[in-house]
Length: 191
Image 1 (tube, rainbow, N blue to C red):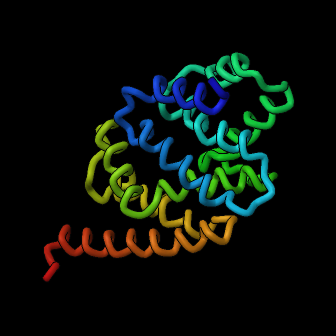
Image 2 (tube, rainbow, N blue to C red):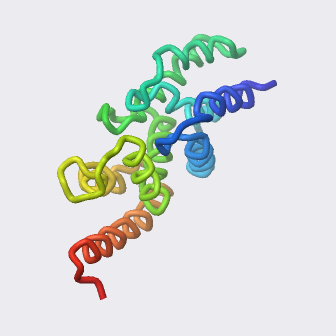
């Protein structure tokens, strides 16, 4: 079995019972976005795909143990340099870490992960995550709606690739329309 297929199977097992919106469907969408964004780019394709599959395996907000990525990568027929490359890509993807990508590969991975956090899918994932954590729907500082203002509405302006910028514009506009409708209904002024 090749390294990508082995990693896909591993990740599918790790994310099998996720109820936070960081499930295997999210991983597959990020991989598909990475494949779209890396077209015509001179990048390390296999390293980028490995990182796309593995990027949420140790996400701190999901409470998974550290070391799972390194353990998995050690089972693959890849070099130590490739292992470090994949780990570096994963390290630079997180919004909460505030990392600036240092390679074209990490720009592409960060764009793909952030694209899946906005638009219609991003809205659905926001409420799935909020529901899994018992986060209120209201307009308080800790609400699901506040998450749009704290993070999601900022993502479209931070895209690195031209294709991601194009996709982000449409997804961002959709979220703005959703929030406008949400607030009108919340306040009882919708027509």
